[in-house]
Each structure stands twice: as structure tokens, then as C-alpha cells.
Amino acid sequence: MFTSDAISYVPLFCTAVVAIVLGVLITVIKIRRTAKVSFIAYFALLVVIFACIYTALNPGMMLFALLILLAALLLIPYCVMLAFGKPQHIVTEEEEKEEAEEATVPEVIVEAIEAEKIDLVEKGQNFVSLAAESFTNKDGFQQLLDEINKTCIEVTKANGGAVLMVDEFEDLVTVKSFSGDFPPPYKLPDDLPHKPLRVSTSFKYAQFPLRDNIFGEVATAGKAELLAVPTIDDRIFENGPEDFLKLGSFIFIPIKLHGSDIVVGLIALSRNPGTEPFNEEEFGWAQTLAGFAESALQTTLRFKQYNEKQELTKEAGIASNIQLSLLPKKLPPLAGLNVGTYTEHTSGVCSDAYDVIPARADRTSFVVMDVAGKGMNALLVMTMIRAMFRLIVNTTQSAGTILSWANRGICSEMNLDHFASVALINYDPTKRKVQLATSGSVPVLRFNAAKNAIEKVSTTCEPIGVEKTTTYKDIEFTANQGDIIISYTDGLVEALNTQGQQYSIAALSAIIKANAKSSGKDIANLVKTDIKKFIGTEALHDDQTLLILKIQ
Image (cartoon, rainbow, N blue to C red; front, side, top):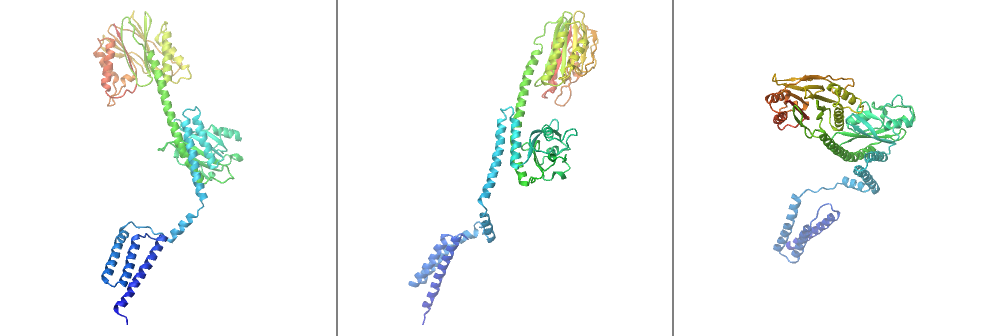
């Protein structure tokens, strides 16, 4: 007969067997990596198995209970970690299948894709290298455009391509680089023979407006386009029927300044009919290369702008120094006159000038001129007029005749597109006789000491350089002691203050009348001070020149 103590050994051995089975299962889980397994689980199971065997050999519930409690305590931290730790992703059978399929993708395809990307990057980096070299190479910019065109043709397997640049001043798109077969997608001129050489030569030097043609439309919209079947696009014109004029497929990609929507150029690629049209992948390659081209062209264009600005600054500095050398350094003593002058220049080459020419004992000539525009052309016109006056005023010719001769001389220069406003004043100190002629916007005023009033004595005429047949009339009068002859350029009376108000003729007249008894030099200095006070912190917008002749 079995006792109750004997029967209790059965659960002990069963517990040990269950613990062993659990250990085996945990080992399988760990090998297959279907879940995270900790060494704590192994240790807890070993404690349970030891408790069961030890209790069977040495009966006593106290030690068994303590060992079972120890095993349970060991599992608590592990369970807490699993219960409150970060959830683990359980891989499903479908995911395992997908991973297996991905793992079976041939390595050669992956390597080909990576090689293709690397090749595009290398070609794009070549653009940037050429851009850097273009800074010191006279033809560097053209070489960069040719390389961009050549590379895009090679990568996309196009039959022909072109790079066009946008002229922002004339609103035109101009072909700058062209090679290969490129059937024109625009209407050819009616008088152009349909010969391959004539058509390609015409396209090589073509210019297109920013509308009514595919090049201008893409440049204006700033959006890349793939035309697999261009004949259904109403922006495309097919010139046919010659085979070399038949259209295949096209890619058009605008080139923008980095970080903006400003289009500076255009890449155009063509593939002949009868061949596979461009696909989306090739379209993507061309866009990638266009991105590198944008970076390279931006670098080159920025440098060109900087270089041109430096050249203009250098040119302006040279011209400004030449101009300053033409102004009278020191006025000679003049019989019967006290002369005051004031001139204020903006940056660069001034458009204003004055001259004092002691021609003869009975004639001193004074010139005030305002040449339209700035730069070397303005300086050239100014120098020519000055030279003419210095040659002719020593003759007996009148002011009007001298001005008319100078006008014909300037109009005869076909390469000059500038004109000038000029006041020529001849003064005879032996008779206090004033003879003058004016052109354009430079006036001559007279302060009549007897009347204490300022009056305009000049008339309005066309500027020098507008019409070759224009003649200028003489204005003559006899001045009195204390009279003041005034001439100035419009930049003086049109000077603006911070409120946008002009200095005005009235303000100039008020200063002269209030100081009519002062010398010509003092009056000019007082006008200068008053204008500067009026302008304040406002920048000077135009050159200013003032001539004061005080009759003694």
C-alpha cells in the first residue's frame, strides 16, 4: 500500500521533467531567435529542478518551498523587463518571405545601379571643375556649355542636343552650344533652304523670343518637359517632309539659379524618329545632370558678374581721374569778373563739367555742360565738346555758331548715342558785354542789380547730338556793375531732401538775392552750404554744378 509521502514524489518528478522540457524549448527559441531569451530563465529552471531532486532525496517541505520561492523571485525582474520594455517587432511569415525574395536579388543589379549613380555624380563634378577653370580661360564658359551639352547627349543616348541661355535684357533665348541631329521644333524661315547644313547652321546661331515657341515657353514656365510624341503638342512645328526634319522625341529642361525660380538657360535634347522615345529614367538622368549644370553655371555667372563689376569700377576710376584732370585747377585772375564755382559728383564718372577759357583780351569763355548718361561714352562726348570749344572760342565766331558747329561734330559720330546740354557764355570785360547760347536743360540766369531781380535770359533748345541741322541763336546784353550771371545743371535744383522735396530754383534765387553784394566765390560757397543743409542725410541722386559770374 502506498503512503501519502510516497505518492508526493510523483509531482516532484513531474515538476522536474516539466522544468527540463521548458529548458529545451527555451534553448530552441534562443537558437531560432524568435524571441529574446535571458540567462535568468535558465538559472530559475535549474533551481526548480534542483529543488525537486533534493526534496525527493531529503524529505522536507521547508527547503523545497524556499527554493521554489527563489526561482519565482529570479523570474520577476525578467518579466517586469518584458512587460514594460520597448515593444519588439515580430517578424511574420509574409515579411520573412519578402526578406528572402529581396535577399535573392542579384548583386550585379545593385552594383549596376550604384555604378550608374556614381557615374552621374562624376560627370556632374566635372561640370563644377570646368566652371572653376573657366575663370582663367578666355573660352572657359563656352567650353563648359559644350561639355554640358556633350554629357547630356551621351548619358541620355540622344541624337542631338543644345544648350540655350536667356538674355534677360532683350527677353531672348539664344543657342550657345549645339551638336548632333536636332530637327528644329519651330517654324523655319520661309527663305531658308531645307538643306541639313543650312538648317543646322541657322539653328546654331538662332535666337527665340520668350513666347510662341517651345524654347521660350519652357524657359518662361521653368518646368522640365518630356515630349515622347511631340507632334501632338501645339507648341511644336514640324517642317518636313524631308526625313532630316521629321521629329522624334524631345527633352527640355530649364536651368535655374540655385535657390530661386530665375531661369538662366535651357537644355534641349532630341532623339530621331524610328528609335525608342526618351523614357522617364532617361528624363531623370537629364534632370540630375541639369542640377549639376545649375551649380556650375551659377558659379561661373556670379564670377562673370563680379569680374564685370570690377572692370567697370576700374574703368570708372580711370575715367573719373581723367575727368577731374580736365576741370580747371585754379581760376586765373579775370578782368572785371569775380568767379565762383561749385561741383558735387556722385560715384563714378560725373555727367557734369565746367570750363573757363581766357581766349583773348576781349573774350573769356565759360562752359557748363551736362552729358546724358555716365561711363566712358559720356566722358568721350564731354572731352570732344571741351576740345571743340577750346579750339574755336579763340576765333571771332559767336557763341551760337560755336554751339552749332559742336552739335554737327557730335551728330557726325555715328558710334555715339549720347547727347549733352551745354551753356556757352562769352564775356567781353572791355564793354561788359555778355554773349551766350544754350542747348538742352542747362539755363542761364541774370541777377539784375538795378531791379534787384533774377530773370532767365536763355531760351529752351534741343540738346547737342540730337539733330545735325539744329542751329543755336545768340543772346546778347550789356551787364551792369553788381550784376550776377548764373548757370547750373538740373541736378542742383532737383536735389531731394529726406521728405522727397526738391531744392528748387526759388531756393537758389533766394540765396543769390540775399547775398548779392558778396563775391562770386562766396555766393557759390553759400549755395553749397544751403544745399547740403537742405539735403541732410539723403543720398545725392545726380551730379551738381554751379557757375557764378559777379560783374565788377
